[in-house]
Length: 141
View: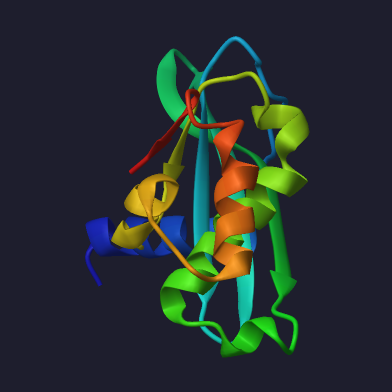
């Protein structure tokens, strides 16, 4: 094994066996909210923020949140579960996000049109209303 490969292996081993250090939020800086939902499994989100470490900018992790889907939620379609994940994450992290500027990162492109979507489903309509208070401060990417 070459020295370069050995160093790469040691670095990966270190990253996988050591928990990331959580940082304190700086409410003057924008947040990044990463969300993902596993169909019929659960919801997850991670709140990040840019920090400077040793003169280098990097993303620091503020918190992780997750939960299992309820029985009735497990029957939702993929887009509905992703919408639920966004609304749930906003509710859980409102004390960080309310009034501040932040970006939401998701693998679901349908979320970008959630605010303007016409729907006949009551729960989707309620979610649209719940997201309205963040509309001017949130960018979905």
